[in-house]
Length: 243
Image (tube, rainbow, N blue to C red):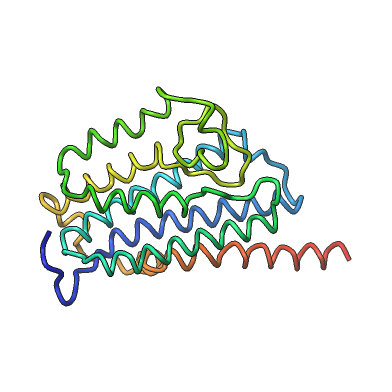
């Protein structure tokens, strides 16, 4: 790992890609909230139109997270800086659990996207030196939940692994497996791009995409704030229209 430069290079194109995921997620959650308040009627838990979208959004998030770790590894990011960012993700994961328990006490989020991200970021950091083996590791991680399943992993205390026989009743679920595999692929792809096609992510970003880049840089803050804002606005709307 290289020593960390005083002013690490910023990759606006990767930030913009993360911004795309953020906007897509916000639109998805807005539709979910409309359904929650009875303004539309959709099955977000079984309809492929929604379940596939959710899978694509999480995949994009996890891939970008892995790619970001490739950049951090190349720039020689030190452990104290890593743990500072990790602590923010972990703290937000706890807040998500608490907030979801208030709204959905029977299906609160015990291991959602942020919980999974907090775990796989540590694994990605420790395995960043695996090089080409990351591609194979990612394949194994993605395939394993389809090949190995056991009822022991079906409880709230063990389903975070991902080797479940039935999906838990929860509003969000992103176990270590298979999502670690997507992060590993993002890490492997990031290392390959930085070495062989750096211009793909280091090039100038068109001005029209600058807002997406800004969103991508503040993705965690946006993630935590957008739902309270959307839910608050819809509560006001339904209160006024049904009064």
